[in-house]
Length: 74
Image (spheres, helix red, strand yellow):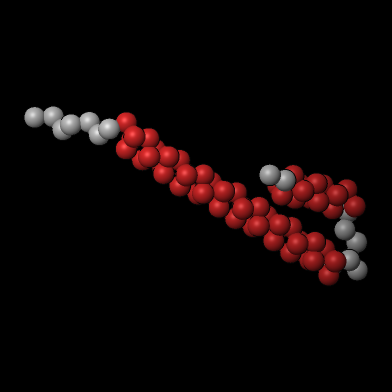
């Protein structure tokens, strides 16, 4: 004997809850990823400041800063 289908309103509520959880999870992942890349960027910038007495190729430094900036933009 097949199980009876739940009413539409119950399905609607269920899917609404699932979508809300998914939105919250995606939001958390985006925030965490952004925080992580910003933290890495700050560590790299701090490291570059500490190494400022050593000659760093200016083009390489600019390229790394551009890449970091791209990853931190969400």
